[in-house]
Length: 502
Image 1 (cartoon, rainbow, N blue to C red):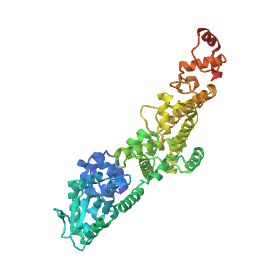
Image 2 (tube, one colour; image 1 turned 90 degrees about the horizontal axis):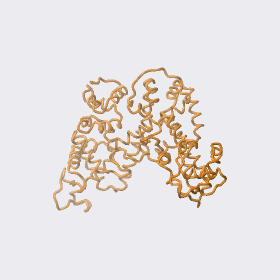
Image 3 (tube, rainbow, N blue to C red; image 1 turned 30 degrees about the vertical axis):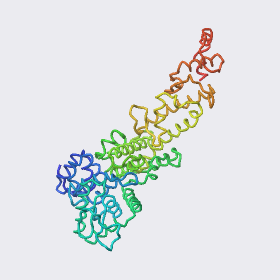
Image 4 (tube, one colour; image 1 turned 120 degrees about the vertical axis):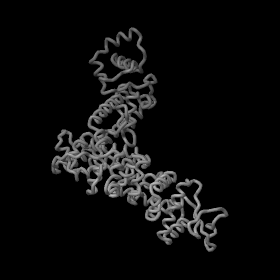
């Protein structure tokens, strides 16, 4: 596929519709390869390089802009608020192998605090000048030098290849500007490491925030249901959607069709009918929301799986939000919502619907499960899995074999049925059996599993005994029946009595 010059938006759309390998080939085969590479947002280029593999994608690196290259270090080169030297060195080596001048560009033009901190973490700088501070006089061993004044030595943890790349970059910097070369090395010598790392981290955080990766505290807001009750939020956004103009129907493939079709079928199908500008705004918003989910996951931002799972969560919650906003399943109403609401608003509705179920689960946990001795450990596996999912700081759906984000209204309906059963079980144990603090029934191990409602409970033999004793007017602790007692209980235990007991 040979790409002709077109506007950057259309070029990006064409490229992102391709798998990573063919995408690389298309950019390199273009009559304007640099334009093709720089049409991609830094995040898309980074994921393209990782997905295609450095061996195949390294020719893209010399074509990238400085902000794109800086993003590689920002997204993958930090472990929380500390520079990760191993990861940074891998990128320096990759840049140098693609084009030795690339590291020179970074040293010469990238953010000053990042460059100073990076160089200071990789090398020692000595100054061959008797008027200099004795701490920086050269040692009595062979040390490489670029000029007659400054000598450079790799630190113990610096790989040889990374040192060679940095050394070549410093030579390039000196050839461009002796003043800039000397100023950088003086800064490295005299900077206070902790202060420089903090300044570099703050600059990096600012750059990432511009690309939709805010700090953790702000990112966690993506999981908040909002100060307003969900029904009020949904009503307000539904009214906003109703007032939106119905866009004309078009048909364009979404660049994230593969992910959207599995995580968000309704969103993918209706989103593809939007006019291109609205579709692009929707996708841009979903990616930014996905970036917030990525930061809030606490997973390493340099891992492509972090981005995949975060985008999957954003798409799934947007699909759920769209379903919640259009309960009548009217596709015109859904398309109005897509056209009239931002991606963040639609996702917020979906996340709010999930959090309202998580609230019910927390109420059970802090209520009867906390009061009935050993209640949670005794819940069988079918009750444990969804409880763990909903009680997570980032609630997930776990009623099927593979934990995943909530995706559609049917997920909520199944969880509602499970919550109903859990609440009924708690009411039965506390109200009928009078279980509470200090009152344990060891024979209830595990507790009977409530599947849907009280009429579909898989009661244990122990609980059946309790029901029978209740039917004959005894509310004592369950114990096996003698033959005569069992016959009496059998006569008393009819469907009507059992129903009234429940």
